[in-house]
Length: 177
Image 1 (spheres, rainbow, N blue to C red):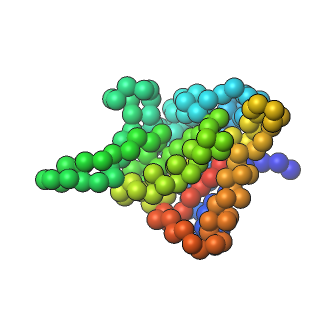
Image 2: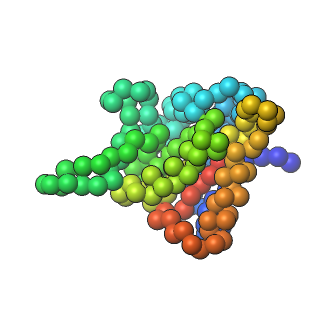
């Protein structure tokens, strides 16, 4: 029996925290609006928009547009007098659980956005967890369909199994939409 969404929690030796089941349930309840096997042209902003109200209801701060006031920004470096000097914009932030959210679409795997998310969010101060959403189905050029979630999951397995790259998170939730 297939479940939606596909998801994996890393490191695999750790049990997922309680907030993960609530988050995954929310994604499941939005399946008809976001499933990439059905909505082949859906971009990450549209997925975020479809999830926004439900995520806000459970305590998330979610980007609501492209204007500066609509963005979610988190500090990376502080300068003189403790003022934030370098900030990164992210798709979402849960201030209680200290979770960064990034939703990726077309460039998620092919454009290396997944790797960019891993590195950039690793630098965000106070981020204990990372959630990355990847397409379960993506078609481009001559490739009929690839599963970006599986590609990212396999990469996460390699990262944790090799032990050579130490990520600063207590855990990472990867899900396929």
